[in-house]
Image (cartoon, rainbow, N blue to C red; front, side, top):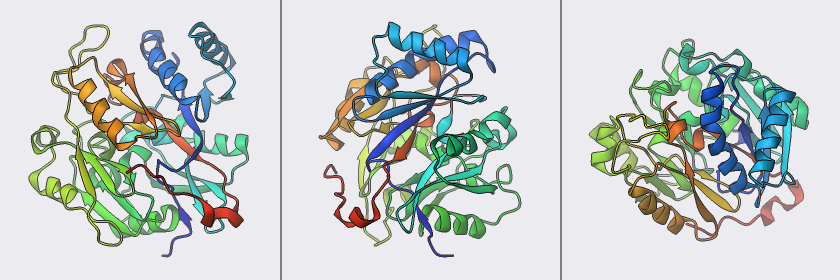
Length: 357
């Protein structure tokens, strides 16, 4: 199949960022209250450079969120709300994945979502892209024939993808599709022609080893990952480490590799629960003006922030405390989703590529 659509890389300009705000309807009030501060921090960091689109469960939740924002002195100027019942906060995985078609028109790819292989409630989350498509009047491509979570893929914006088979091609996601058929979907609807597969470990965590926990395309020429010891502790085999470190782009050019450590210590939540494992800084999110980096009240927070700031000299790196979110298995990138700007087809060739590499 030939490419009909292209998913832009995260450093390309955003119209806005999507968030599904925590609520109490699925996992209770304590869960919601523990996560609210992280969402306030993300919103505050993003609104200076782009819109923040907040999916609220209902109008009562919308009013509660507005109260939280007001109490935190966060202006509502660049914030809007859409009301849609949802199961949880992981909009990267269940929400819309925005792409450009061959005429540079924006579209939403609406892949199937089955709660990470039927491991969690998902019926409300699965229809979020359809609701957003209607609300913002961006056409939707129904790709429900293939399950795909946004956190399961890392793309460089120029045709290369990195992913784990355990979270994409495994029978828990796509029992009726071969790997070749899955690749064909990605070629057609994401613009991917260069596939870098790691096997991953099915059942290791609820995501079955999403790639964005330990590898990230920092831009179209740079991969951020961990050192060998940390990758091994993350259950990445030596063979898979070699695949990461020797990865090449569509032109067969190697990527620059930037190493970021794990936390020095096991992560302890704000309510004093020792999770028994370390935290990753690779799961960060690149906004227009800010880079949101997960932090854990750990000595290596400052080390990671400094390294990542060096990659993005034209953006401000902001640490986002994710300790309580991490207890549920995710970090900043897992709960954000970018909406690219609408491009005028007559000026696409004039668009400047990012200067930070």
